[in-house]
Length: 167
Image: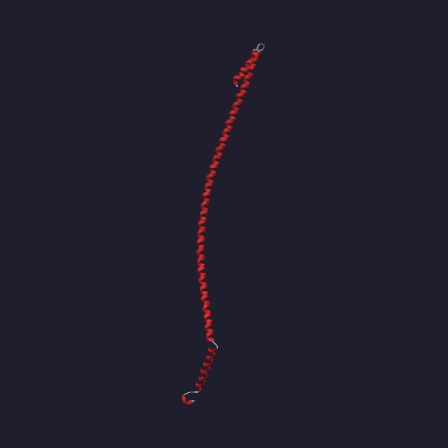
């Protein structure tokens, strides 16, 4: 063996090479590269599936975000519309209450004025009636004194005439 230029470590190298070739042959024979390729392909498919799923989730999240942004804008607009309508309703109710209050005050003022006028008219009527009664009574007393004996009939007639003229 020494004739070909081999030294002591060369034999070990040859045997290691032969063992490596045999090991590689056994690995190939049992399909280890196919198994490794299959595992890598499965891993690639899983990663591709995960990426596709992540892309779909990202697209869905983007769509949801846009939907929520649109809904939020709609809700803000609706809230503004509600606030505007509430303000308009408050102004309308305030104006309505004010006009209603003014009308009620005017009606009460008129009712009070009517009561005062009625009380004045009643007082004037009572004063006139009382004055007429007093005038009739005074006339009766005067006539009674002046015409004591002769005028019972005349007094009664005069009282009736005065009472008829005053009322």
